[in-house]
Image 1 (tube, rainbow, N blue to C red):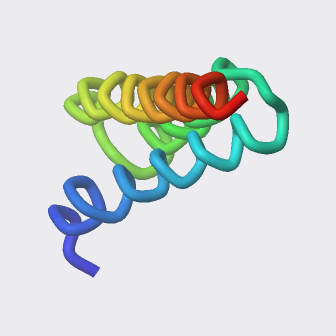
Image 2: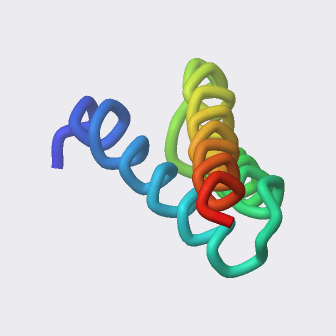
Length: 78
């Protein structure tokens, strides 16, 4: 697979899915971003180089924003 496809398309989609699943399972907005951050840091050292660190923070923020949006929608429903 192309590295640009992985970094720009696949990993953000996975971060959003993990953000949704993390909030749905744990009812906590910080569980999924923590998992995304830890797994991205592991990938940084094992697969990618140090320039991937920016994407680590972007994916973590994306998972956090997804959890916050889901929390807002679930509060609005109740």
